[in-house]
Structure formats: structure tokens, C-alpha cells
Length: 73
Image (spheres, rainbow, N blue to C red):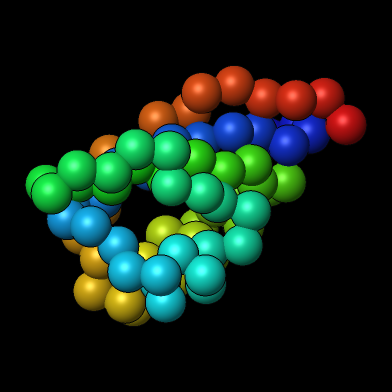
């Protein structure tokens, strides 16, 4: 990964404010009773894996991860 890259993470269900507050650099861009789409920029793969690990540790089911583009540094 070079520069900051943007990813969408689709998770099952709705996320409470306590969980979304933990996701630094990610925001809820779409939410419905069945799923929530988060979008955020990460500087490297380690940060992305950290976010995914955090979601798993909070028992959030990840349905899909989509790379939506990057921004040069």
C-alpha cells in the first residue's frame, strides 16, 4: 500500500455508538436494519488489519471489505 487508501467495510447489523467511536478514521456511510457500511482511510495494511481485529473482538460480523480508492500522500 502506498499513501492512504480508502476502504468500505460492510458488517452485519447496526453498530452502536460505542463501537463506532472506537473506529478512528472510519465513519458510517450507510446503515439499515440488516447491515452497516463503514468507510475510512488507512495508511497501511497493518492499520486495516487492526480495524478488522477490533471489529472481530467486538463480535461484529464482517460481510465484505472493498477497496474504493487511494489518495497519494
